[in-house]
Image (cartoon, rainbow, N blue to C red; front, side):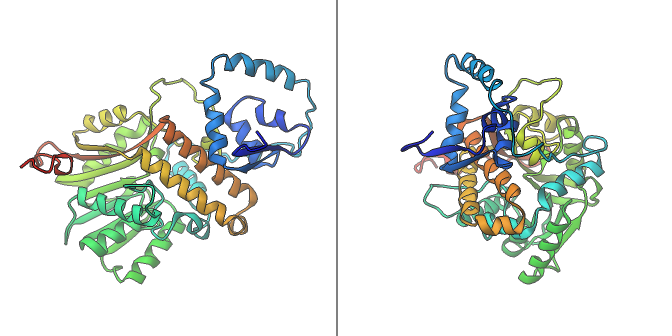
Length: 385
């Protein structure tokens, strides 16, 4: 790409094309950018949209095969000898390994996340009504929407599983008067949330637990899990929903907000991708139907299901814009490689949401004995009484 193109791929050495395209996976392409084999100038979203669209071009696979045969005859020299891929040990989705995986992702440094998340420090899809809104306004709407879906009120015992930096528990405590408990595996997040609660003067009603949700005890009137269940894994979804069912008071409400896939084909062995290697180790996405089925298996009933796919694409674009605007500070807070990992991961995810390869849903669950509420008034005509 070049000339008046929206974006340009810059090849930094004779072996750049080989590094980017051999083997022909998104992991190779991502590593080529992260480790400086190539640069991306201009609009990263346009470039990734173009790359994603190539797979839809008729005859694309034959063209790629011809290109790869030619690449094997080109110089193979690289600026790097190998990629520095992080690795985890232990049983998949064990408490210890999950702690290591989550710590790897979220303990990048609070200063780093502050550069692009905005004032709410909410690391999940905002709720936009139009593209002219600010990110902070859309994030505050999302927090408030969750509280209203859960029907929170003074004295409600509220649990946030995977509470992050505390944005939801603090909003629920300050605006709805709940007694809130948040749990996170990340030590950095837990300390941040505790300091924030004290600053807001609600630390007497907000408890932040540094630990695994499987270790939480007690009974709660309402539970939320926002951007956490992607770490659970398909084989453990039953355990996840069973645990939340045990923690939830009879007739209580559970809101699960998480990313899903539209791919229903299951492979016996998943090949490593750029995101699964560098961003979300051990993360697994499932179709929404499979998620609902697992919830129903333990006795939950789905009371409401809402897609936020378009809002998440817009949220990610805002995050990338903030990160690019604070490039030097982000590199100072972490490293050049970390900045590039997050820039390409978030931009690629935005394209994925826009193209419909991944989705995100808010699913409101309860037991069948909860009194039924008829209708969703916001979807009705104004003259419908």
